[in-house]
Image (cartoon, rainbow, N blue to C red; front, side, top):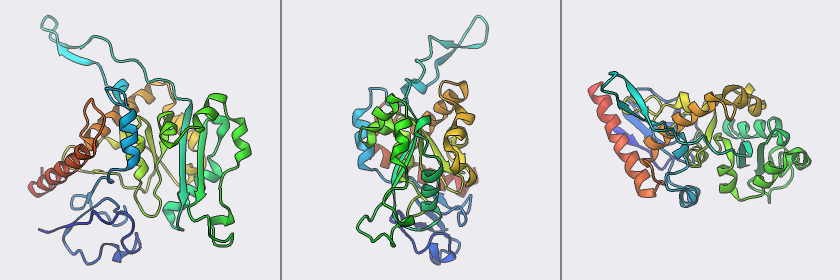
Length: 306
């Protein structure tokens, strides 16, 4: 009958993955944006959203009137009195605009844990510019000595490999971080300092399909109240699949395929649930309101067992 609300534990709560990470919570429900799957108790704990970021604001400012998911919404349906059946009204919106980048990630390495190591693995093995896949990581603390840096280097990708990228992909990668997101069909969203990812919401806000390690707990995952259709939206990858992200996403939902369009429709629904934005760009107030309303509705659903 107690709730331990830990919205401040975005950076670190002791060592994630150890019993001490949540303190002495006892039978209290824990609501946190950075819960670890190994400690999360389905039906009791709540995985909250990550907070608003400057990137979300920039993506929203650049969004068209209907938002970046407007082309993923299905056609309206209406009841046909003559046939007694439902039918689509009018035409569905156009197919998603082509994006020159298949999958991207730009990030830093700030610590040595299982979540940072996912970034290292992906940048070492899945950086394939010739396939329009760019997974680039750099050491956050460049002033460290070579011996102190992760793997002893500042950058963990080969810049020469980028010469093999298609021209449109190279030009798209030359833009700022938000431009890269908006030109990517998929966005890699691994953990970093802990079991959470700011990039998850940023990728979704830009109309891209998130690709996440399968040990990452996603916002509102497993909820009773209005659960986001994560399995239909996000592409979850195993530790081994971090070595071939481009091949994985093309096998699961190649851009232009019906499977790709289905995932985009599911992701549009996820974004609507998490952001509270329906047909309009997201706002900090809207995101906060949607998160608060969902949390209390979920607690009520758990208490009533519905």
